[in-house]
Image (tube, rainbow, N blue to C red):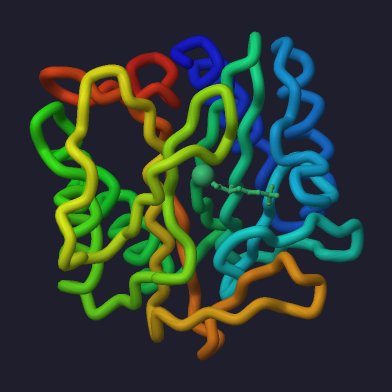
Length: 242
Ligand code: MF3
Ligand code: CO
């Protein structure tokens, strides 16, 4: 899991360099797939339940699972969420990031920053002896303190020899405490945060999830390892998760 996720972090480091106004979402997917294969990985999103690409590319009010298209050209001021993963020697990695395209508004930058920070607020509780929903609650409380909508219809997940394993990991305060965390568990924690309503809708392609009110949405995900002490962020390169 360390190796697989480290490789994925390296792919992000390269892939983010090509994001600029004028590039198509298809080109991002194409380059992402090339980088994944170049480092010896296999894209785990490609053909997953029929998904047609290696990278989910979701722009502005698209929350997740946007399908890359040649005719979808990024423009100055857009925000773009990338979500991808790879399989290396049977082990899965999964991570997501939201990037600004060219010069973005202060409002958009704040959404990106708060979404990222909500992940770090959550993983303060990602230690053996804590319960899973302590992570969920900390993520949701932090994002909601800015008046943002925390997506409820999609959640994080366990990950290992399959991309999606138990448990599901909500990004909001729950009444139940969730499973007891134990050393060795690997979890994909992935807040999806909207400026407006938490409600989302599915587009006619049956994949692309958009905000119900058309407001901007950001996504941030890392795969982490539970230990006795601080969690290890596995989707990391040069000691940084990007
Ligand atoms: N990225 C999603 C997750 O983080 C899974 C995407 S499935 C795909 O769990 F089919 F859209 F690729
Ligand atoms: Co995931």
